[in-house]
Length: 404
Image (cartoon, rainbow, N blue to C red; front, side, top):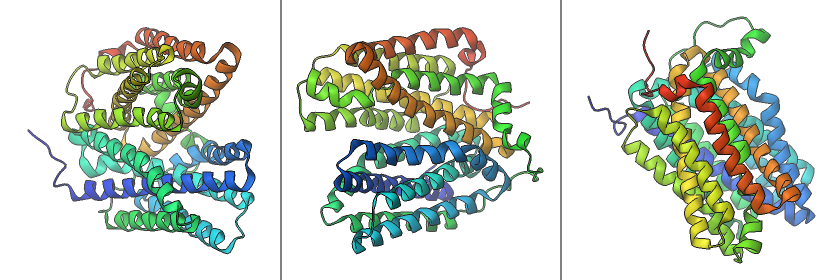
């Protein structure tokens, strides 16, 4: 039987809301970064903006999973959209009136970070109820395509609008958040979350216990965590652009865009051609390709080869991301999805941040090229170890949840 998403109104609305949210967020990030640097001329202050968002994620990821599993997820997402809209409007007014300073911007970054931390588990946990298990992997791939495209378009659009002034960027972001909220309101009510258990520490930490007991889910999440932790190269791209590849800002822009372009192509392929068998081997193969592409990029002194390596890296990462997200959703009961998704969000966010930090530290200690080569080799070692530690994940044939 063939399943289609084309006529699924609920998924189309979900897709529009998620895309509008990512687009708005990316525009805010561009404007905030430019304003902070314009106000302070300090790279440290730029880092503090990211730290404010990171702190919100660390503090609220576990409570966010609890909220997603205990309350109406549609209302949770709508509340987060309203908070992000309010923050964007405050930034627009502050920029126009001239009273916006770094402290207000840090508070705004923390507010946006808090909203996205609560929003993501609730929003992602809604998707299976909107499309069903049979087409969930394709829906995740289409969702990933939209988010990655918005991640590319958002900064460019925000930068272009910024030429007219920061208030216009924040106003445009607020409009996108409002549009996303209105679309969420129009969604049919998702399936009710199972009866509310008492608020206990055991309930809030239930996502950790569930993941630990499910080897397939634990293996998928931990494989991505360690691969991302070891294989992150984004922080070192400016060094490669200027000192190794002998190119300028335009070359750096291409290097940053290459992984996203590869990811979009891979997501589009998976959306049209869902994986039907051998997903365990494909998952480990994609992470191995990620490690090999990291190695090739690390030793390359040619801009075209480096761009090709980063494109392959982005595509491989997207394949593993879609498989991991599908397995997590399909292996997790409806009543647990918020907490499990929140744990995955916590691990993913932490590994991305620490991966960039690790790359910077290693580059300082042993040099830029050896640091990237070390990361690529480390990723391949992790693949070998995880094949031995998680044989059930290697043998997994399909994404669709096995029925008891």
